[in-house]
Image 1 (cartoon, rainbow, N blue to C red):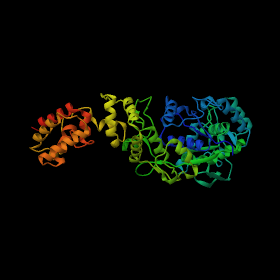
Image 2 (image 1 turned 90 degrees about the vertical axis):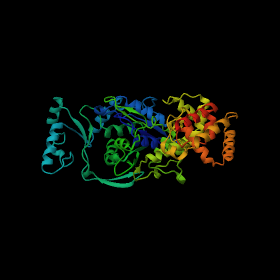
Image 3 (image 1 turned 60 degrees about the horizontal axis):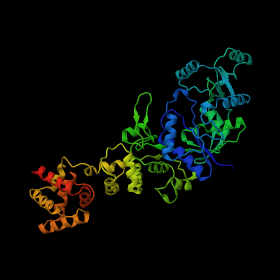
Image 4 (image 1 turned 180 degrees about the vertical axis):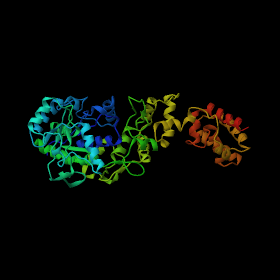
Length: 501
């Protein structure tokens, strides 16, 4: 086998879905594992469904994920152009070639004529298929005489090019993930290869491009598995060697049957796209993982394990580690169920791996309005990151570091505050006035004070926490106090005392 070359070939018809990211990732990991090349190709022949900005979105999303193509429309390469819309002359050449074989023919049937035939079949309870049973009775170059065909061509009658599916042949097919299986050609229809505007359909364009770009392995979603018979025959028709194929299972919704969709994301409260996407027509914004606070390393680690298991069932792997271990033979045949909780777990793990300085830079680039010096913010990060799933949690769960409480949790107040508490905290505040305000000193003063009053530490620490935070949550109280500083700490204690009067 020659050099491994794989391609990810999305259509710019909208944002990149989680399933598309996984296909691109597996392509990338396989190429890197085999010392091969990863190609990004844009399949934009479906002009009716083209969405403005989608191609740029796809490229930005892959870059954010760390999936960098060796060749692409932006980067170029020896097999350029990498947009199908710019390869028309190549397709025209191969259209002429396949029409000289017995594998293709031209068909003049209009959409209205085919709709009428479908309606006739449906009225009888049948389903119409343009195939070896019907093509001899329809308006095409098989059923018509050469003179009739030439007349229609001379009259500039629009036509499509269809594949002539062989009759009653058994195709023995093989898939790296799913193994061997067979298909009888009588179950397949005569697919359109070239539309009446002269542009090829996915079926024809992608095998031409894969051949021209020397693609060795085609890794794609299982929705293309029914097309494998046709694609194998197209390679045969052109006299080319077919690449090896691997069809990935679906990513399943969190509950019930079926594949993961945007609707599931909306219902369960998680993104299904890597980045925010703004619909250019409606202006509606679909939330992305990046803007939701996911780290790219965590996101891509989570995606990789939706259908593949590394050795020893390791869960935390860098992109390089994944590439070293990746094996198409270990990709699962069954669908992988998406879990919002697992996605968040991955992000939490990667947040913990980040240094305080790295998280500081992330928070400074966020849209959070944090009015705190870098020095103090670093200390907040250090105290709060253990509890954080997303960078914003450091701010949101530690808001008491940035602003004094204006109210006190009712349930916590009943638990922590009684008639003596105000006097106890008032006296403690006086004891704190003259000390060097470090966590260690604070801890000692509070401990000695509680002991001198015959109180358990909880009787002092709980109301103290409530006064500082407004709730019974947060890191160790002395750490909170040191970071707030003496003046702010005593001010909050006095505010709480006044509130509970």
